[in-house]
Structures are given as C-alpha cells and as structure tokens.
Amino acid sequence: MDYEKIESGADGPMRDDGVELNHTTDYRLNYGDGGLTFRQLVFADPVPVGRQILERAGVRDVEQYALIAILPGGAMEDIRLDEPMDLRGRGIERVVAFRTDVLQRAFLLGRDMLWGRPDISGHDLYALADLAEGEALYIDVPGGTDIPVPRDGMVDLAKPGVERFVAGPPHPPAGFDIAVSYNGIVRTVRVTPGETIAALIETVRPQFGNPGGDLVLVDAASGRVLEPTHTIAQEGVQPGAHLQLRPRTVQGG
Image 1 (tube, one colour):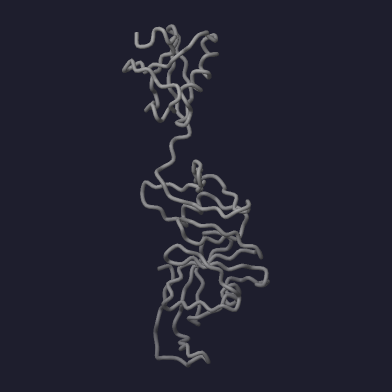
Image 2 (cartoon, rainbow, N blue to C red):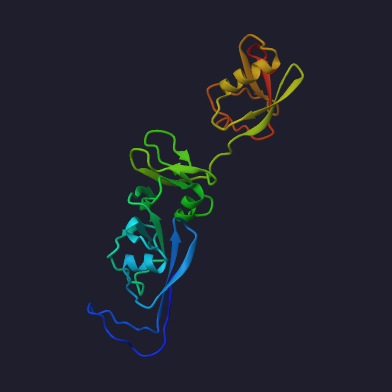
C-alpha cells in the first residue's frame, strides 16, 4: 500500500460520528498535483474529507479543484470536498488533484477512469493500466482497427464520445528497412507491417526507372512470389529481407 499508519499511545477521544481519534497516530496518503508524481501527506484524523486533503497539500482555493482517488484495483472516483475518506482500511493508495471543474471520463481496461485535463500522456496511461508483461495499450475502435497508444505521445480525451482503452499484443514496429533489387540494382526501402505488397511495388517502381508491365515481388531467399493483396506482415517479411522485383512472366525463375 502507498499509505501507512504509525501507532503509539493509548486510545484517544471519539468524534461525533463514532470515529476514534488518536492524535499520536499518523495516516499517510500519496498526493499528486495534476499528475502521477506523488508526495506524502500526513493526517492525524483517519477520516479526512476532500477539503482537508487539499488544504493539507497547500491548496487555498479548494473550490476550484477536483480530487480523484485511484483505488487499489485501478478504478478511479471523484472525491467531493465534503466527502470523507477512511484511511484506516479502505485501501485508497493515491489521490490526484486537478485545478478544473470538468473531469474527462474514459474506460481503462474496463474500469472507470477520470482525468482532470483534456488530454493524457501515454506514459501516464501505461502507469495507470499496470499491464502484464508483453501487453500494450490500444484505443478501442468498434468495427475497425484499434489504435496503438504510444508511450511518448498524447491522447485526446475531450473528443466526442468516451474513449475505451484495451490491452493487446505489443504494437508492431512503426517501420523497418528491406532491400529490393531489379536487374542487379539494389535499393533500400522503408516498409511498414500494414503496407500491401501491391503498394510496395508502386513505391519502388520509380526507383528503378518506372519499368512497365505487370511486376511482382519475389522473396530472394525462397523464390516465393508474394501475394500483391497481402500485407508485409501477412507475407512474413522481416527487417533486412531481400525482395526481387520481376516481370510476372519470369516469376520464380
């Protein structure tokens, strides 16, 4: 847990609501100001309200702030100024404060997510998601191709609709180099996994003087003709591969 209590001494007085107060006990909570960089706040009262947390953090105009609790399971919830937070057993690890009156809502791995800015960095999303090893984050696109979340980029949360972030296999590389040859001339070409073989043929054709006719690409190592409608990934083309551009009439020769 990111909070802890340090006890000493005898039992203390009782509050009106029945909460026992022991002023020799410290309750600690991690506080982030607008992000996931935290510092510890210490409370004698085990059930401070949102206003007290902000004031302990040094915030004066507390009415201008929104306070979000990040629960142990990863869900997030809005803490109102007069709402108590029980630090003794609730298990709240972290709170983040934003100077805003608008919270952006999303779903992160199926859990409620709240954020006090119109965008969020990929770094913060990954930190909140706490993915298993070998997983990556994507923006869910129903009926389409999910969009990878770059760790070093930003995601707009203020667009119409509610963003849903899901986990999946690691993002394919953005691109890599291969060699393409034609009549003994070799060119280095940058390709992407989603690019089709047909598109690659049209990309490299001008690099060899725009030869006419129906051209194909052949794996130089195996002699296999690549299917024009398939993608680079589907054909298993790897970084550093050597492909030969040939007229279709001599394919495999």
